[in-house]
Each structure stands twice: as structure tokens, then as C-alpha cells.
Amino acid sequence: MIEAMGVSKKFGGIAAVDNVTAEIVDGNVFGLVGTNGAGKSTFLRMLCGVLKPDAGAVKIDGMEVFENVRVKEQFFYISDDQYFFNNATPEDMKSYYQIMYPDFDGERFVKLLKQFDLDQKRKIHTFSKGMKKQVSVICGICAHTKYLFCDETFDGLDPVMRQAVKSIFVKEIAEREMTPVIASHNLRELEDICDHVGLLHKGGMLLQKDLFDMKLGIHKIQCVFQNEESVEEIFSGIELLKVDKRASLYTITAKGRYEEIMGRLDKVKTIFVEVLPLTLEEIFISETEVVGYDIKKLIL
Ligand SMILES: Nc1ncnc2c1ncn2[C@@H]1O[C@H](COP(=O)(O)OP(=O)(O)OP(=O)(O)O)[C@@H](O)[C@H]1O
Image (tube, rainbow, N blue to C red; front, side):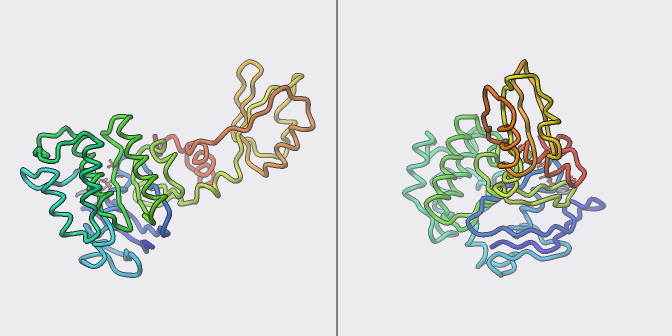
């Protein structure tokens, strides 16, 4: 488990991270979202001991992280600005990480490089930005650590590669207990991969929640009524988050018990009713409204 307890970090007069408390449970896929400058990278750097918090503490499996070599074997950090040795090839990085990480899977590394069409003997500095990112991701996956910290990992990858990297993550999570913490300014990037999300805003953690729990109370339904109906009357007493009407097709996002909402629809004549999946953005709109924020101003 990763625990951040009242963690703060200032740079000059700027409070990059301000008194953040978070708990990341093993087996979770934790998404850390927030706008540019919200404090995601600073928070991640403190989680993995690159930065020392000014106040508070970070523990991984009960051990202090900063300057603790034993803990560092437990995680790999794919940073936003990747670091490779001068003139290193992927093969050189493999040799280096094999020393750092006892469980590094060299065979898998070679296989993944081939799959991504990356030459293991070519100097990494001649690779494109996206190719460098791919090398970092492959190193991170093959390090076989319990925790994987990812800073804007999908940024700079083309859509095909993004999907390929996500599939590797999903497979890895399913096959072994790996707990990724993925920072991104783009909520949509995290949609299909995270099960727990923390929203950082101006250095503070605005909310952190289980996606399943968040989804439980919000429902999105498309329907066509046989006769002209008043949606407000049908759902009176139920909180309507959004009502969209295109020709005769209504899309209604409502907060409440599923049975209650569907029960109201049963009482009127409908030609068509379909329950739609909610996007992460829709869930966040509702959650952040509760704490008095407009999500569209906080994330993309
Ligand atoms: N080394 C540093 N020196 C001075 N200020 C810093 C430093 N690192 C971060 N900051 C400041 O701290 C705040 C948080 O930055 P951080 O990089 O953590 O945000 P972020 O959420 O990761 O942003 P982005 O999505 O743009 O990467 C910003 O105001 C930034 O200018």
C-alpha cells in the first residue's frame, strides 16, 4: 500500500502540493488527474522518493520512501522527461535495469521491443519522442515491480501505440498484482484503465474515489416517449444532472437509485429506452459540483 500523509512541497513561494493525504491500495489502478500545474508530477516525485516532502510523510508498504533503497526495488517510475544514459541503446538500459531490479524480465524486454518495432542496438537519442516513451514503458513493465508510477505516459504516443501500451498494462494488471499510479491531465486517457481516481487542483486533492462507487448513483438513459411528456414531472424529486433533447430522443442523466429512476419511466409510455454507460467526465461533473467546482475548468 502507498500512503501519503499530509504531504506538502513548495518551490519558492509556490505551493506545488499542499497537505495531500492519499491511500493507494494494492491491486488498484490509481489515476491522478488535474490541469497543467496542478501538482501531479511533484506529488508523483514525492511518492517515489525523488523529492523530499517539506512536510508530511510517504510510506510504501509501511516504509519511508525517501532515500530508502529497499523500497525503491518495489517500484519503477516512468517520468514525463525520460532519462537514458548518454549514447545508451535499449540493450544497455536492459543491462542497467537488470542490476537495479532483480526480477527484470530480459526475455520479455526483447519480445516487447520487437513487437513495438524498436531496434535494441540503436542509440536511444536517435529515437523519436514517442519511441523513447515506448522504451520507457517497456523498461517499466519488464522491471516487474509491485508499483509502477507513470507521469503522462500516454502523452506523445500515437493512438495505435496508446492502445497497445494500454493493453499491455491491462494484461499485466490481470496477470500479476501490479499497482499502477498514472498521472494525466486528460480524464479520457484514464477512463478505460483506472478504477480509482484522485483529482488534484492547485496542489490540493479535491477528491479521491472509487469509480465503481461513483458510477453507482448516476444513471444515463436514452428514451423516446410515445406522447409529449415533461421530464421534470416524470422525475420530480429525483436530481436531474443533464437533460438533452434531439428531435424526440431524450438523453437523461440522473442521480438516484436505478430502480426508482427506471420505475418512473415504467409509469409513462415509451417507444424506446436504453441505459448508456457513463463517461468518466460525466461522473466527475456530478462529483465536483458537490464540492462546488466546475469540472470543465479543472480538467480537459
Ligand atoms: N523544480 C521546480 N521549481 C519551481 N517550481 C516548480 C518546480 N516543479 C514544479 N514547480 C511548480 O509547481 C507547480 C506544480 O507543478 P507540477 O509539475 O507538479 O504540475 P503538473 O500537474 O504535473 O503539471 P503538468 O500537467 O503541466 O505536467 C507548478 O506551479 C510548477 O510551476
